[in-house]
Image (cartoon, rainbow, N blue to C red; front, side, top):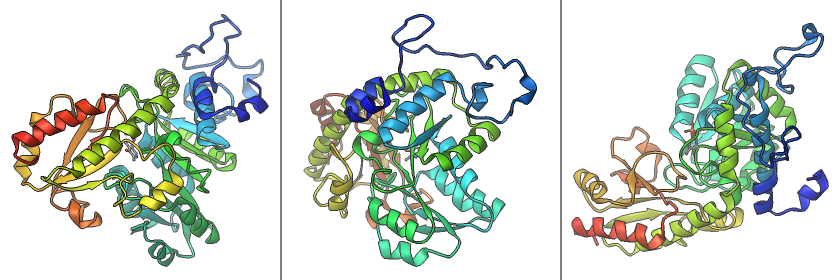
Length: 396
Ligand SMILES: *Cc1c(COP(=O)(O)O)cnc(C)c1O
């Protein structure tokens, strides 16, 4: 496809075609997996820059399948450039490592993936002298108040894992840029089908490709999409020198998974809405956190920045004690108790009242809750499975 034509094509068409080409060697209409660690050197190898991430030299510097996937993700996110790495956390740590130095200040959301909390609040802070402030980023005044002259980065999730908190990405991008800082958004709960942070003004969209974009629960990967001037630095540091390279096989699997992202994501979004509405009718459910519900505190903001629905993730609590949560899970037949999200199958995790970050969550989360990844099963079957488990515990 020519560059110009590509720009006019819809999201679904680009999910299918971008990054793929007919093989000039064999005529195969799908690009092959290239597992080789090393690529042929030019006549005079001594002139090579061994840290070059642009040429195919050595797979840690970047290889064929990684590049195809980068092309697809950059296109779907609406970004200039992309680097794909071995996991979502490799992408997050690579971004922080490449952008931050001691003496810099970072503001990050009170609701983030656990590794972000560990990386910024413990490792970068204690080992590398990076200052950190944890802020409820749904409160824009609190974000403004936390800005310092050395603030370099604001890092957020919307919806946030695990409370489904929403923050205003456009407004946060303005605050960051007015103060000479950058905004990174972990977009894992949405995928670019449901939200595109770069189009909303963010500098970086980070994805755990492990989740919706691969979608089949069988490969790990992460991506950072943004401007080339930053991506060049991130690629050199996080990929070539830190060594967070994704395997060609996983890049290929994720490339294949991403082809059906729009269809899968639409079903995740539709199913989650149905499950959330069902949970609202259950007497034993103490609260349901889903940005698609009108009673979500930031439903209007979610509506203004999300498309095609509100994601497949939700959280809910029970009017019950600790043991009831465990028994409830043991009654489930269709839904599996497992971490991760964005798989074909529905997944549930009991997050107990001992979670060390409870103090950062809204009050209703303090007595324990479930995080639920709505799968691609028929919504009626997911709801029926929940219903029979509620019934067994007299919660319906
Ligand atoms: C899973 C997840 C990550 C980490 O991704 P991995 O691929 O497991 O390393 C980061 N952010 C969010 C929001 C996640 O759900």
